[in-house]
Image (cartoon, rainbow, N blue to C red; front, side):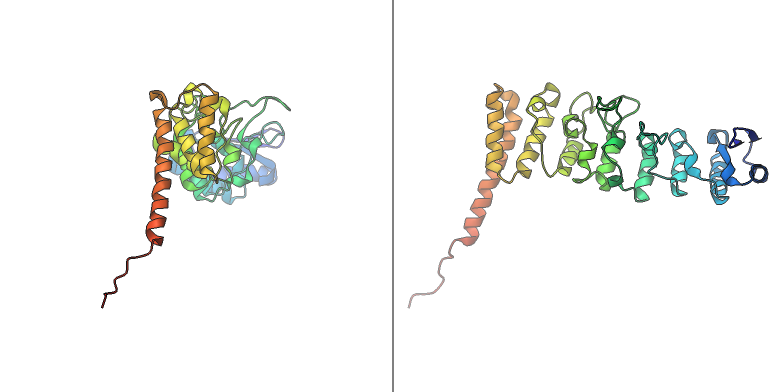
Length: 298
């Protein structure tokens, strides 16, 4: 642990313990808590001592949000959030870097942020994606909040499910998570590490409108996902028959035979919808048909 004054002069250093009296002395020497910067590597201390240290440093008025939460042990990061760490601050706080500090944190820290009421609507597209420069291409294809940082440009499935289940990733915030194309176009490819059917369906159910991208829907990497996409596309369309006709036109225009074995799953989606629609019509007729008379003839 090191304490510096605002001129960078070292006032206190200790790698063995968080000595509260010595910390107070350093603050007095600097002329107040507003005149110091604290650097601390919590890995040097026990979990209990680190937690007590965080609470003490907060209680003396130091801004604990100055600590680099994304390099902390997850348990320490969770405690920082519980103690009021600023969940909305940006890394570096510069005009170029608008990535939120919590985006690269362990899933347990993200979960605690959500427990503390993290409002994703306070973030915008520039917080989800980084750019090389003005009007240039994105650095990342996947939102910082969903990136798997051990596998560049892949989706962290645990974080995705957490955001969906918590309601933070919803129909209103979904567009912020989308890059050049909606996120569901990355979920059956090498980017998405092959999401399970359950999670893929969960993701699509977030969207109240599906964007059919002709240049992506027939991509080899989207072979499995496209059936889920078409299914949700039909479900969310006001004109469901029109949506089906659009799908058939897409197959025809791109030279694919929807009757072929390789596209049987897509054909099954369409057949199931038509069958469901027929059942609904039959049910309406059943309920509205006149009931036979039970009056006896005299």
